[in-house]
Picture 1: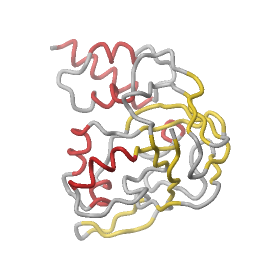
Picture 2: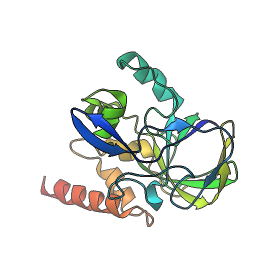
Picture 3: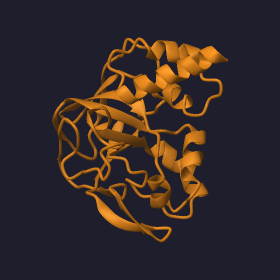
Picture 4: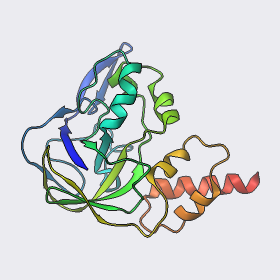
Length: 215
């Protein structure tokens, strides 16, 4: 597994459908070492901290394998950072990564926490109004990470598996809960046992369990 590109952006205003929108999704590749802090990469910021960023979503990774899937379907040329990811990766896939798995990239150690649920700004970035629904349906969510150990990383670094999670739920399994009807009860039950699950995901799981119980 390898880190192909490190991408960052600070909030800026762009025009979308005649409206001014403040966003940090237009990330650009960075050359050289980039410090990784507890809740962000150096030079990176979030426009809306209510739904973006924070320690449970400090770093977002997206695989180059997904670029090959999306490029024929989109009108714009896809470059590293096109999906708003901090890390463009090779070989790090949602189906193989469990919630709670640890990876070392450069001198930083990251723990996988959850899949992405995009907002309308992904459509803005990719110039595709229906992108949110298409992204969720494709099951190619990318992976959010919590920073376990601060450090530095840069393009070209190896991504090394450090420690396996004791919980048998992959990031892909979690992403399926965005769209599956009814939700997978085994996945929900397994997630209820994860002590470090983010508050938003803990609420989601509880809600889905309640809904499933009424079925």
